Image 1 (tube, protein in one colour):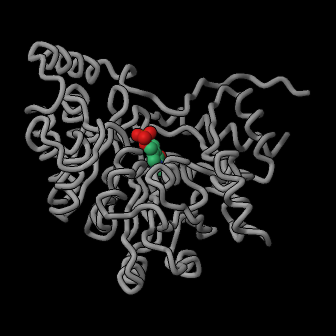
Image 2 (cartoon, rainbow, N blue to C red; image 1 turned 90 degrees about the vertical axis):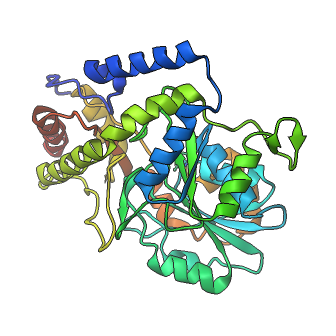
Length: 379
Ligand SMILES: *Cc1c(COP(=O)(O)O)cnc(C)c1O
């Protein structure tokens, strides 16, 4: 077997500790919030909500404890519950489906467009049944789904529409931002997302005051006035510390996303002779902020091992389609006795491979990734 020279160590992503200037600013922020001892609600959370709503171009943003909680509360605010079916792409992070199950509704898995790996009006329409009440469209990897026809379809068929924008902060959809086209948009600020906190946090954006009000109530035990509980809620608010950190990072988000777009394009260009299928070109009116840079390969496991030997980190998003995970397999099997109808999602799970991408990625690192993949063709 050939001995590979480790050309470079290229990680999958880099977090805030790799940027001394940002780290310094964030530590000062933490000190300020700690000095105020306002750890829940208060001015930092209110300011973040105003700034994030403004950034997204939505009327309301509600700071929450995670992206999963944002999805749960979006569904509850839209009155989805037991007996209702919610359409969910089979190739998302499992949280998209879990939120549906947690509120007692039933996820119905939908296949995706083979090129974009996203739901479209075509993949959704055939799955709408008599109990279908809602669709969650996921802007997976940071690529925005084409929602114009999906929005009309949802309106015609009386479905609520939620955007899972947990991987697409700031991405464009026509002249709007991801998360603001549907009845509600859900965001995660898990540390590795394009906008990441120092722990778990999330947000819901909406232009519907009723939805915003319900989510605000439910994130804090249904109380508007302390100990006067109007509805059954939970603890799902964003911590003030996370809000303060996110305010600092939000100011840099457009710059980081521009860098991701530029690096994504440079990687596609650099990989033009490489033995992988790069991310598909953008459809009109959509955008890609490259939360992940995902290629496809028929020899994924060998390619992964080869890249690991070159010092190039990779990951798989996601190795098992949701309906085939042990958590969901039994229910999905019961409903789909003859073929899953989810062949594209199943094929993608066998072939997708995420390569490194992050805003500070250097030209040398881009070249190292491309050289590593190209060398696979010769081995
Ligand atoms: C990260 C993510 C979530 C869940 O967010 P958490 O903050 O981890 O709860 C949901 N959907 C998608 C597509 C995600 O990437």
